Length: 259
Image 1: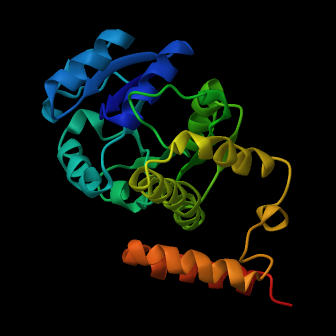
Image 2 (image 1 turned 180 degrees about the horizontal axis):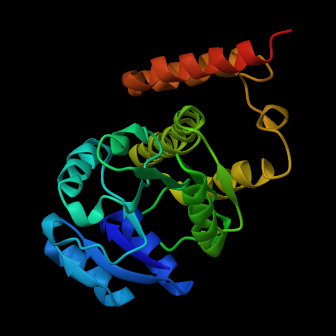
């Protein structure tokens, strides 16, 4: 299997390394910044380029791992190249429709690793779900094959399902991480060691591996402890922008357990 990687950012960087490690040939790596393309290409023995017109037809699969707002522009540029017209293209976005590619390619799909990536942190790729789909059966089979090489979990997920999954992913990842940040803002302001909260944060995640988040909910909102809630809100007057958020989340928890 020969793959060309369009994009060398957080997703492309980790995906390229994983594909190469599992025995696939990475033919070319594209990035608008040639330094990023060269850095990744060196690790995975690929050819770097910062010119989309230089992408050739020697790969079996072309993975577009760029920001959502430029997928259409990149696809349009690649679609001008006649040697690519019968090649399979798939983007790695959680939110973007596969129809962004349908306008430019006969064979198109999605290959979405459902995880948050940072270049500075290694991930356990085998546990990352690969959400894939394609218009043609043979292309779905190919994406399934590639996904199974790098992960234990590969699922066919439609555009509609993937868009919903992405909303849920923002809730459990982006929003929860922001709440961790707000907690750190409070401890830093009071010169309290934020590390004291980390075992609690870790346990919160670990326990829902075996139990429902609904069953694991604790805290003053869950037990309708209005006295403690009022004390918290009184303290948060020091952080007025947090009061509305605390109140909103408290009401959401109380509503979830109202009988």
